[in-house]
Length: 149
Image (cartoon, rainbow, N blue to C red; front, top):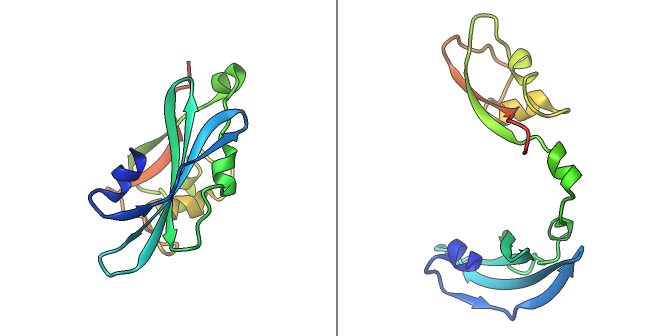
């Protein structure tokens, strides 16, 4: 189960599963409480969905008492239309080798996002400031993959 995959062998107080329907998709929410090795109580919220007999889920982990398995994120699940699927462009991680003249701006402009490209690039590569890139350095960018079929 999704919960066991997250908790492993950690003991937990598991609540009662609650049936739900999210945008026409049958779902079940579950809340569990466990303790970290340092003794801090943590909650795990799972929202599992049944789409054409295939299971999908969101898992949210946070401080005890602060989670709600019906977070807006979990309510965003919906079945995509064939047209939406056909228009999807998957993203993939690409490793690039810095060449002479490459900058954060030039490499980040290749990112598959319409906004915050430089910020996303720096976060992905753990670059804290605008610094000169070193030729030969390998960095990550997110690009579009082949269109869905």
